[in-house]
Image 1 (tube, helix red, strand yellow):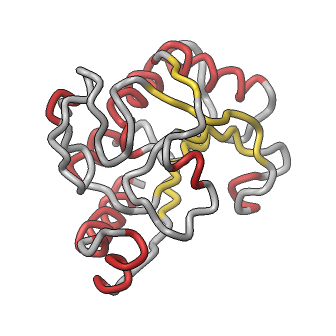
Image 2: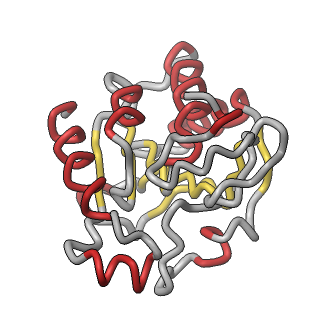
Length: 188
């Protein structure tokens, strides 16, 4: 996964995110997170009794017109952090009693998240990792997460190409989402 010619998501932008170019996700190669905290209002099976250790990543590869977090998904909100800092955030959330680490809209930061998870696990991260996604993913990108993600939380938005084009500018949404979800199931 080379961010100098980014094709990690179905948008296949081919931008040089390392040089600071923005892809469809509106992000460079620097991790940008909008919020990291215990989240009690996720699905009950994800939040548990102590809360999900949720990291909301800035930017998104979808651009849905109905987004409830549009300032985050447009990349307007957030702070740049290093891979080491992301690993420390995971461990801090675990120390706060999080029942899992919940990666929200992580697709465009997969290479960096992999490095952060490996570091965090080496430093004692032991709670499950949730990959909370729109399902607009490439199978080859998801394969890099095998063994690092315990729970996939795919949000299947569309079957209709016309609706996915109209509301998320992604006519090929289901073409990618269907095999992506199959890969998530295979891994877990």
